[in-house]
Length: 218
Length: 226
Image (cartoon, rainbow over all chains, first blue to last red; front, side, top):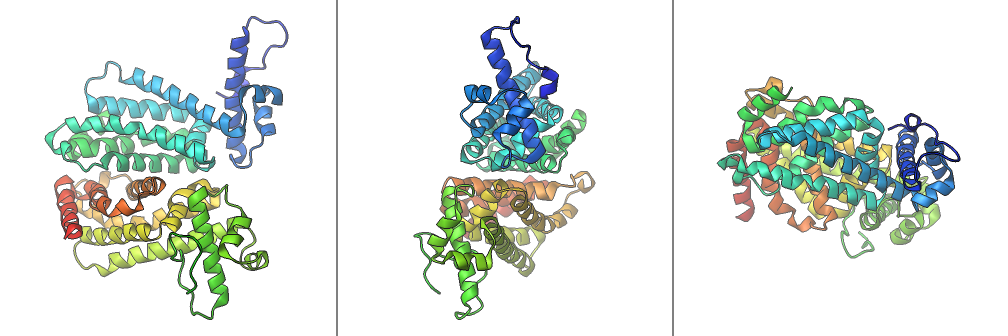
């Protein structure tokens, strides 16, 4: 959601309630942060950069956030919240864990590809944005573990997978998507669908069935 | 060797000084050890040069003689720690004369042992490097890339080798490093031994299939508990 698409906020009397304007400003600041960080990296981004991209005043920034870090955390929450909704929609009506997993991966990658600045913010810049953001990132990806673990019910062999299977799978997914986004190819994250799906399905379904479903998904 | 300040991780993160008389090497080693310990306990951003010189028990002039700034010291630490561990991992792989899976097991065993022995330096490379700017992140990625050639021969064991993703090795290495990093963040470096067989199984599975991977992991688990 680049700030330009939102257009300048109408001045003076307009049809928006105070809440709507505040909500709007918050979204603009988050989009402004993503743009500014995409331009020069989180470490060197200043408050002036953020408000310039967001086309709001510093006063508005401070009315919404205490610090650059808080704005970053809010951006992260927006993405996580949005992904939750998209994934819930994507898996609704899909039969069975394996196809639901593929649908969830597809929806996630599609969103990240369509918002490359936000994708880079969450996947790459989050790592250098201080302990609070790092902890939030770890917590967000750890939420995937119980979803993956459901795959253990798919067949008897999957029940005796090592306890750390979900952790290492998550780590592999983080590594794969990080490298793509860090290489400046966030728009192409969608291309990782087969690789991500295979990583997720392989331990739970075995190679033949995982490969069959990945082909079907392509 | 002079005792390092700090209760834990008294080992140097980098290579040993050439000799006891090599004062400059000793200074560098102390600066890098202090950098590793401080970054492990409070993170890269929160570590100041003042903290480093105090902990390393060197003066500012000595620090500047070796490194222009904090980032340079951190990059030198990453370089030394990565090179040390990856070289040892590569050696273990080369020395093992058994089949490929045994060689990967030996290599992974050394990696886990090194991380457990030098948790502060490992944390710098595995956790803090990715968070400390592009150059440091590049060193982290370079370390992952050096592990890829050890895994690649496993492709010959897979009947579908042509379909394996080009980036599989780096992705698996990324998974291993993530698991190690999460354990370090949780302060559980001492529990890594138990995790070794599971991680080996994770790495071998895409190449040799689940049964063979589980069997190899079982052998390593037996060897550890023996």
